[in-house]
Length: 227
Picture 1: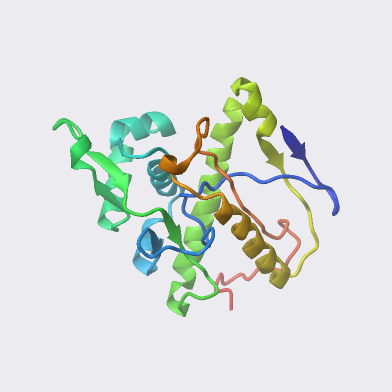
Picture 2: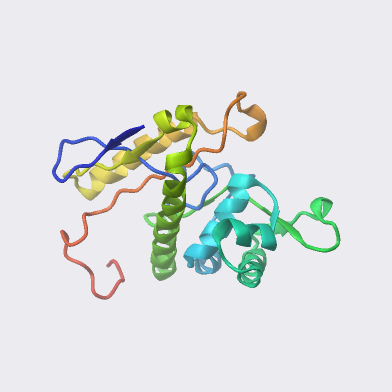
């Protein structure tokens, strides 16, 4: 396993997860209209909750599931899982999978491959909802990384040695961050494929992409408007 930490510039480190199917603040590669969804204001508000983001991510990473199974996976109670599933369904982000049902419990699946929201191109009325969504995505990523960290001591050698955890500290302008993000997404898009196309021995791998000013180093907009 590669790992690195950088209190100053020039020390490399690694990335984390955001799985090819998880909600993200921008798309991994070019959106596919038939499989991806551009989030409008209403759906941004539905997803402005880290647990709801993780429920949706779980369905996209692992396939159809039930409230009970999701509750077990995320360590929440089934009632909470059912509530978040209903909210996601009302927002058109998940649909029932009746062919999997037994009549005793409802099965749900994601309606799309990924959610797409680019704050640079969205309308002005989406700014507040978009920031709340971005915060929820960040918190959801933290929770998924925490759960992944619990498995690190037990990973098979080949996965442990291939995995990577770490970070860089770079001095960049917003324009450079945007350019670097686009380049990283191009790399991710080259490896995107479904389970049916994956080679033997493949598993769902979560690749988180995060780039943000080191906390406390830029002047904050107290209004939160971003204007």
